[in-house]
Length: 378
Picture 1 (cartoon, rainbow, N blue to C red):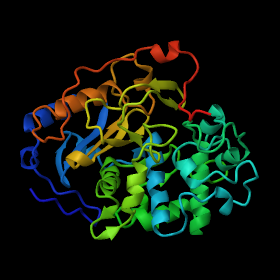
Picture 2 (cartoon, rainbow, N blue to C red):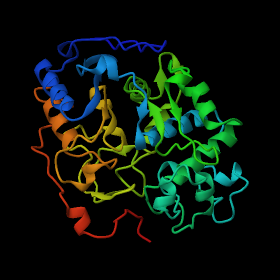
Picture 3 (spheres, rainbow, N blue to C red):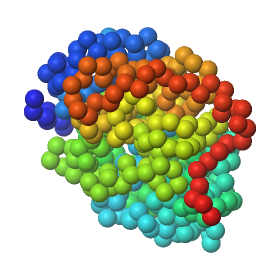
Picture 4 (cartoon, rainbow, N blue to C red):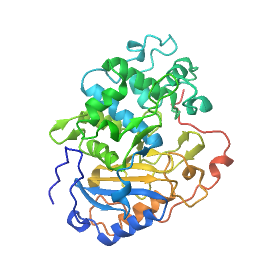
């Protein structure tokens, strides 16, 4: 079946039956039904540019604008990529080039460091999560550098408000206005169909308070799936998309504010629950899968090898005692079982072998004590 043309007017993707795009219809129905029973608002499965499955309540809920929590970070990565595509900034530019308030301890942090969560700045949990109370850009610019930039991964929040501020300075306009003009409008997403909450100083909180619908999350996922293209228009360069899904030097399971489905020694998330993962993000999904991932499993999974995008929004769907699955950005039991069901009987050579039932980490992360984070030796 030929690839579908993406809708350029904000409309729905064309539909196709699962069997028309090489998916087992029974397996697809089983995966969707399983997900709908797990406090899901919307579940959508796309292949070759076609919407091939959605939940029974999806027609009502897929267009509802809801917080996507830390999946917001991946939206910011795409906004950064658009600024780079227009030549407004370079990924290895120091932030001091754009932010005159950055002092000697902060000015050499680069755009790339912020995208890889390796700024080296101390993460002040309560302040960075108390969005209405603090100026998040100010928090980042006064945060104590604990490590040299680019040598240590820590999943932080305020540094991403700083990245949004860099984009504003580079573009000469508010980063939300820039995102609307340069990314969302070309995708057919109108200003009333998304927004970003702001902190007390009026800075957009790109780290976790972007509001979007499942319908429009799918559009963003497809831009990445098509190497930055939307129809005839290049929104992101293919090189940026390649770099975005390349493992960061400080965390092989993380790219440019995207989670990568690579097995690692340790991936750590600290926002706000300390959590540890020493397995692929979704062991039952192809290894090249990468994700927007937010609290309560707000998921956009991009699977290049299968030419697929999967979107799920809702509340926490996991039914294990895993700390990693309770509320963090790390997927757990639901995603594992969903993919096992979805790919059952898929004849595509890129489809993963069934790894068996989900392996629960239980309370092991808490028993380990302090948060373990990946770092470059030395």
